[in-house]
Amino acid sequence: MADQPLDLAEAIARVLARSKPLPAETVPLRMALGMTLYEDVVSELAIQPFDNSAMDGFAVRAADTAGAPATLQVVGESRAGRPAQRTLERGEAIAISTGAMLPGGADAVVRVERATRRNGEVTVEAAARAGEDVRRAGEDLGPGEVALARGTVVGPAELGVLASLGVAEVRCHRRPRVAVVTSGDELLAPEEPMRAGAIYDSNSLTIPALAKRAGARVISVDRIPDDPEATQAGIEAALRADVAIVCGGVSVGEHDHVREAFAWHDVRQVFWRLALKPGGPAWFGAHNGTLAFGLPGNPVSAMVVFALLVRPALAKLAGAEPRRARTAAVLDEPCARARGRVSALRCSLVLGEDGWHTRPAPRQGSHVLTSMLGADALALIPPGEGCVAAGERVEVELLEAR
Image (cartoon, rainbow, N blue to C red; front, side):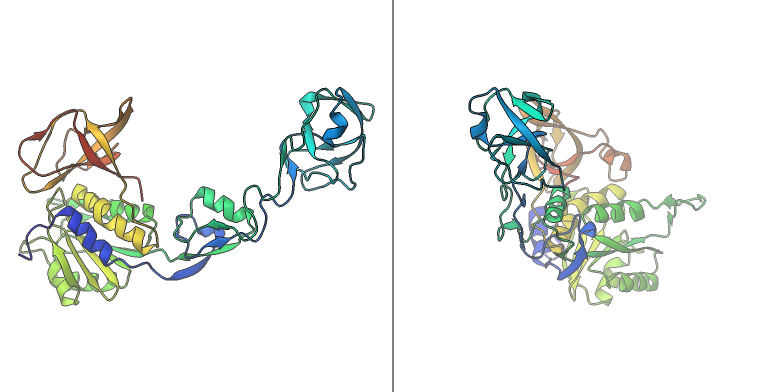
């Protein structure tokens, strides 16, 4: 049946099957953090670009130190950014700083701690080996070598590598544009005074924050009342984004208008309802390249469905491989199974001698937003009868991973 709750793994597969990587854009390097490379980055330089010193000391010819202790004449200095102006000859040494270019004729560096300098000469206490404390040109990367492969997510280390290559701008998949809509007559902005029957709207903060953390660009956050025309208008605006996320109003109540509004705008339903606790009343569809998610209004349910379905979709849209951020952990206390549904329990993780251990938060209601405080992961308890015993290993979905 079309409305039969869908298995979680099948739901993820259907979402990813409709998530296509976005086209490329060229961005300044400083704006590329968290974006995904559209093409290989090939080094045009040798990194390091020249032989240089790994230590402060003296550049020498190793052969001149063979009979150490050996006294050599200091004939110059090579500093970082200011190479020595002459080639080293027999019986000579040049003072050198860490990272400075190795002078011509030198093949080793004697550390300053192993030498004594006096009156324009330096006495080397032990023989140096050729290549000692020298960093060779191209040890890190050679010209024509692929420095970063397409599909790489740009993190701090990647930014450093790109900068070391002199890359000022880079082609990346465009960040997904996300529009968030929260639905409900009862919702108030945090700055509004409380009134009877109302609640403050937390989804308008948590879901955009999760989207930004997943690498998306949030282009709008709107709140709509439980009204058919207002819901249609709100969804029409949200569908201009790459991903439209509506929180609340997606169930079957008399005042739930979200699914009908999606249908009004010819958004094709892919599935409705998940075999998941919390997060069962979730909806997903697609329209002209836009992915549309109807998340439950309960704040924990919305965050859980975002982590399990929306986050991997955003990763794929951004050009990244949507790896499941999962591992296994030992349950430190028994957990009840839910009949016919995967239970996603908010939990903390502690590393023990035998690997990761997990302990679920004490209150797991979908309305208990404080259960997300300190939660490192979702423990995914498979459906069934009875309990999963303490000491058993279960699959956990990490909450901070992209």
